[in-house]
Image (cartoon, rainbow, N blue to C red; front, side, top):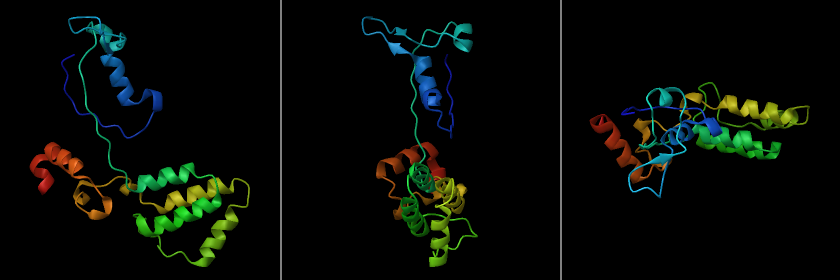
Length: 170
């Protein structure tokens, strides 16, 4: 289609995510053909309108997770005890909302444990922990890329520098 663009996607749609959709537009290269031919490419919508025959390529990068790592852990947890361990880890290693005290007093632990004993207690506990995290810090900011706590690889730093150019060093 001759298009060049940068797409940004934050949500994970599983079978309908942006990477899968782009792969479907490109299709699969036929191995039996001497010329570059594609099969199983998208033949609907704009592809049909422009008589698209597949082909092309794309690259994609994912943002480095920060507080999002904790969100994933919270959602996959099966027990209140696991959540309590995650809470302790959050208090030490995450970026909390400004109004949250990172200290975990014993009374708060007891109250949190008690919530887990009631109907839908685990879900309520998950919601409480998720509210502690600053959602504006789900991913590592470019300005923090050199902070050793994030363990950003040299390859990732080089990729960011090539993408952002001089703005990377500002």
